[in-house]
Length: 344
Ligand SMILES: [Zn+2]
Image (cartoon, rainbow, N blue to C red; front, side, top):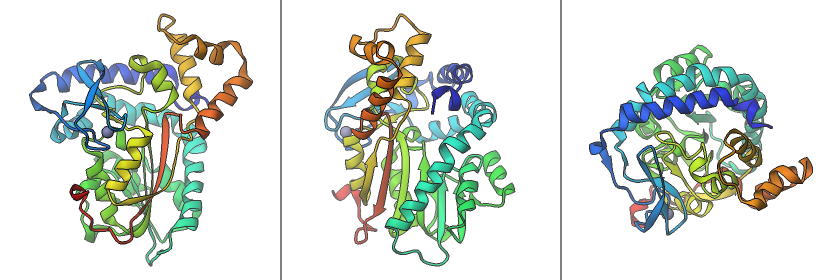
């Protein structure tokens, strides 16, 4: 997989440019911003990681996660996702133009992965056996899951009205609200997914607890997000397009993720960084902006030693949990379904 296939540079840069303008339009008044502790491990000990467009990113001294603080209150974040220009562009242009490449390269393999994990780990496949995707967007992943014919019911949670409507037209039941607002009587599922959601949220722990509540004990939650532990983010730092407000508020480290999952009542089944794009991303950013500083050791890997070394190095990042794309498979703790994370 190449970055250009799923994230064409010109289109992606247009999106980032709009996001930059949205920062001024929605977030220039900082009176609605609040200081927060580390969203992964709750530590208050942090140091300045970097500043971008007036957003301050802190590095947690407890777990190494990178997070914005102060950050806009939840109501501001919600308003932005309803009205932001970059949000609209992502949904209407960016995603649409890359949708089929993403279906083949990302969504179909993910659906197969879900099938493997459900088969391996979910014991209580009660009837009806419901699968839910949080943040179902255009419903492409729902279609790929439905095509496997594994579940009695395939449900999406999608707060954006126009996206919810598209999924409904495809025949799926959609709960049109944030996951945090879903009531127990609306949904009980044995398996759930959320792809690239966590990095955007005001409070990732609140989100995980909400998912835990609509999953049955032992239920499976598979999710992906960005991690600051990854190669391209560490190398590029302030030049990374992944450290980008107002969209990316949390870049939780591998260590922080282990703590977050545990304190939200899940047992970790697998935590990997299966990313394939780190080296490609560094190459592309360096090519676009020759003035940025890249360590000479990294230059050897990305320029001098040829394709085989690049491939081997990306493989090294994957197997050592050093890629910036993190995937978590977690199971709801059987005896702690009602556990209170504030008491741990
Ligand atoms: Zn932390």
